[in-house]
Image (cartoon, rainbow, N blue to C red; front, top):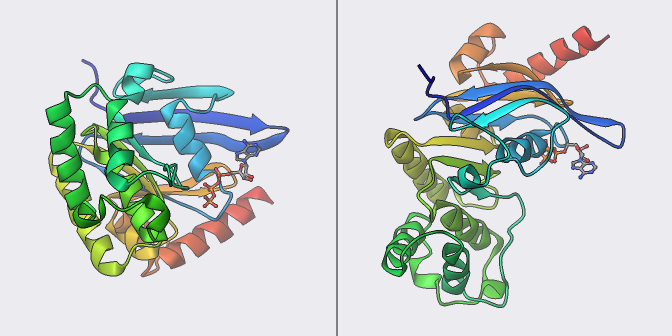
Length: 246
Ligand SMILES: Nc1ncnc2c1ncn2[C@@H]1O[C@H](COP(=O)(O)OP(=O)(O)OP(=O)(O)O)[C@@H](O)[C@H]1O
C-alpha cells in the first residue's frame, strides 16, 4: 500500500561552492499537519523548502511530494508557495497581481474570480485590491503574497516567514485559516523566527548548519530538553549540537 505522506525528504545533501547548505536533512509531513522549520538565519530553512519544491537541485538524498519524486512540474502546481521576499508587480494593483498569477493556474475565469474573493478575504485585503501595490505597506504585500499562494487551493502550502510584518490580530486570523486548511487535509510548512508561531505548529524541526538537529511536537521538544519554552529548546538543542560537533 502507498503510504499517504505529503512530504518525504530523506537524507538530503546540498552544497554550493564548497559550502554545505543541507547535510543529511530529513523531514516527513502527513496530510492535515503543519510543520514549522525554525533555526538561526542562514541555517538552511529556505534551501530545504526550495529543495522540497524541486526549485533547487540536490546533490543526494530523495524528496517526494504527494508520493511523487521531485522535481515534478504537475506536483509543483499543487504547491502554494509564498517566498520570503514578495515577488509582486508594484505597478499593478493587488487585484491585477492576483489575476496575473491566477491565470498561470488551470482555473476557469469564474473559479479564479471566486478564489480571488476567498483569498483576499482571508488576508483582509478585499477593500484594498484596487490600490497599486507600490502604495501597499510591507504587511499588505506579505498578505497579498499569501493570498496568491492560496489561489490554487493547494494540497501543500509552503510559507517562508508568513507572519513577518503582520499585526497580531491579522496574524491570529491567518492562523485560524491555516488551522482550517489542516482540517481539509492540507499540509503546511512554514519557516519562522517568531516563537509564538512555533508554539502553534503541530511539529517543529530545528535546523542548524543545514542539519535537522531535533524534531517533534512543541510539547515533546520542551519535555525532551526539560524547558518551558521553544526559545529555550532552541538554545538547549543548539548547545547540545555544538558539543556533538566538537
Ligand atoms: N544560491 C546560493 N549561493 C550561495 N549560497 C547560498 C545560496 N542560497 C543560499 N546560500 C547560503 O546558504 C545558507 C542557507 O541559506 P538559507 O536561505 O537556506 O537560510 P535560512 O535558514 O532560510 O535563513 P533566514 O532565516 O535568514 O531566511 C546561507 O549561508 C546562504 O548564504
